[in-house]
Length: 186
Ligand SMILES: Cc1cc2nc3c(=O)[nH]c(=O)nc-3n(C[C@H](O)[C@H](O)[C@H](O)COP(=O)(O)O)c2cc1C
Image 1: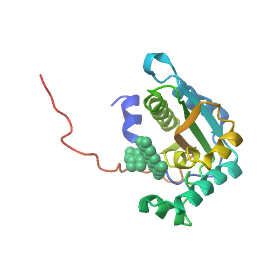
Image 2: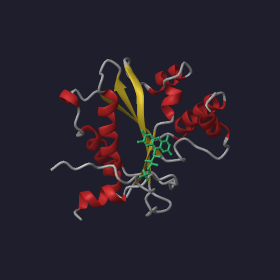
Image 3: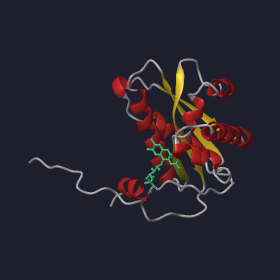
Image 4: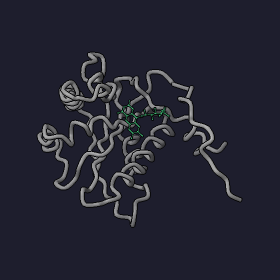
């Protein structure tokens, strides 16, 4: 198996991070991998916000939890009520991926950038988790105040996010993948 295929196979969602910060050069490589993702008609409809400030990361996690507690959705509510739950699993770095609201392919293009960043992180020995939950806060009425604080450009909305940091434990067993999902026509 070549290195790229190995990284794809070995990447796992990391949910336990060391508090030690990742290196600036590593962060740059990860962001570059995101920037080099494909995008429909090369519009690159994304904006990245890197947060390495624990107070801000905790503020977002607590903001999500407060909102989740009031949700009618039992699945979401459960996370809000769980004292031990942290939206970013206490990762030292978070990247928010925001998308141009006027671009119909923004969710797809931002997903391509997000996956590139997860794979780049894995190739550098850095743990990552794709986190969708924070969009629940940032795209809500309450979220507007956070978007301002974060300096998200006007006309961009929260789409995906990535939690990054060195892994506390190395997860080797992948959650089971569905079978019989390929049709061949030859
Ligand atoms: C769009 C999207 C949103 C996700 N949001 C979350 C999230 O909010 N929290 C979380 O812990 N994992 C989240 N995940 C990670 C998935 O749970 C994980 O990828 C899946 O269980 C497969 O495990 P693996 O990443 O180790 O292969 C998300 C993944 C995707 C693609």
